[in-house]
Length: 149
Image (cartoon, rainbow, N blue to C red; front, side, top):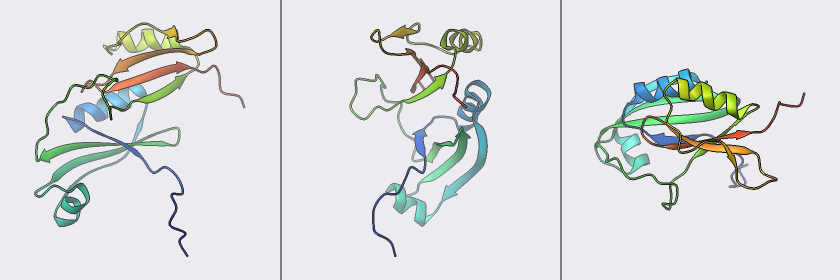
């Protein structure tokens, strides 16, 4: 019998302008693994997203147990909004690394755009920096040190 409460996280989703370009970025640059690539259309998805005529190209990717869903709307076509992190509703994903400076240099060499260099927000905070995916969605790196086993 269901208790009607939320029991966990299923996925986080970003709408992207080009599914193939975004899948390549998140797999080749970040290290996600493709779980599923597919397309949806019809009455059910129109109702779920509340958009008549909706046609979606989708991908589910995973990284260390985290699932990311990428959606490209074929119809209706969306707009590219401004995405500064101060805008209400703008989200980002923070990733951990054990050597932020090395990861920063590696990603820069792959052409990744960073908003700034790695810094500490305060003396007791880890090194961190923001970078952008191909659609200008903000992502974050945090130096957390090696995983404890």
